Amino acid sequence: MDEKPIILVVDDDPMILEMLDDGLSQEDFRVITAANPNTALSLAEAEHPEYAVLDLDLGWHEVSGIELGQTLIQKYPEIMVIIMTGYQNLKYAVDAMRRFSFFYMIKPFRIDQVVSLIERAEHEHKLLLENKLLKEKVAHLEDENVRLQQLINEIHEPGTDEKGEERSRKVYSKEQVLRSYQQQKHQGGLDDLLKNKG
Image (cartoon, rainbow, N blue to C red; front, side, top):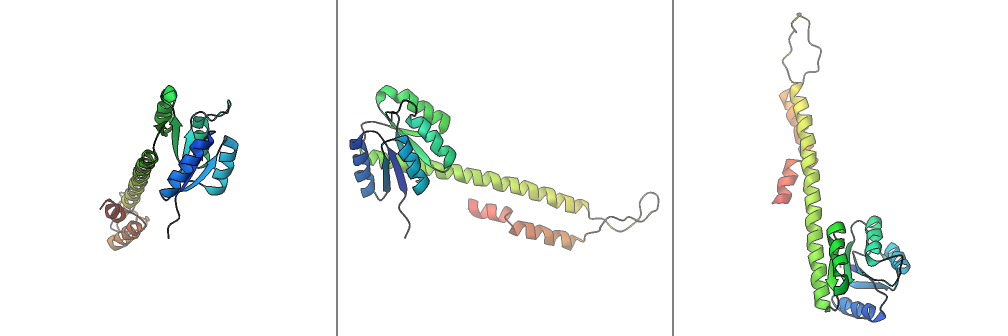
């Protein structure tokens, strides 16, 4: 059985914490809550949550929800951060979305809105990971192409150079080149890429 996704909720308002804890727990998430950044970082280190739902104004002059989100991303690059804010601070949340790829939602909100945003964040996160994987495979194919070209360049018929001296470069048969190329393909080349795209 798959483990429930873990959501870290950080807010200095106990009513918000209780509402999100109860509501998200009923939606099949495991919720951990914190009222301040220090507790949040300790919980994140112990639990490794997949999502962090953070209030923009945590009641700490030195640390905002955006700054806490940045710290979490640095420590746990795969975590998805959602900033909660009122309309008066909306521009800060939008700026965080543009600069740090955070998501945001406006208070007051319903639990179904939170769940919908989490699902959208998860979908976009998967697309980013797939794009990263495709770029890595393209880079691998480019390296494979260079290796194949090097092998092809080493194929020649035994003979002599312009001075009549016997060539000493290593001679590969076509069968050896094809065998080498097939081995490289099985290590994650074009076939895998086409398979994944299909």
